[in-house]
Length: 113
Image 1 (cartoon, rainbow, N blue to C red):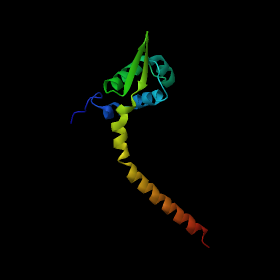
Image 2: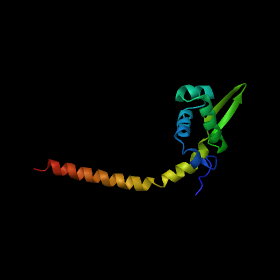
Image 3: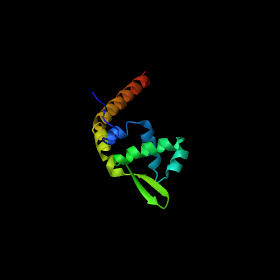
Image 4: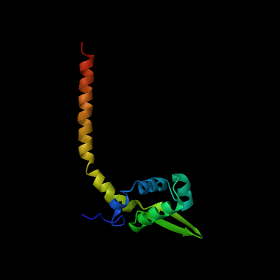
């Protein structure tokens, strides 16, 4: 089966760790390519390439001010990923609750004479 292009949707775009790092770096506010290069210790061509992919799927927006391009996360575009991850939340919470119960039971057994 052929792999879908990284610009097919948000899921494919964030499959690359470097793009997730860029989103993390932009999560605190706007930044220029130069600032992202400094923060992430990536080369300028790498940052630009990954930003282009994130822009193509709408995860990153750009504001042009003179010669500077300011990039920021487009939160609403991340909603499909958030919604998908949320489907696992109930399962995770149930499992963690069971683990808490088991740990409490084991601790109470240790305290018994």
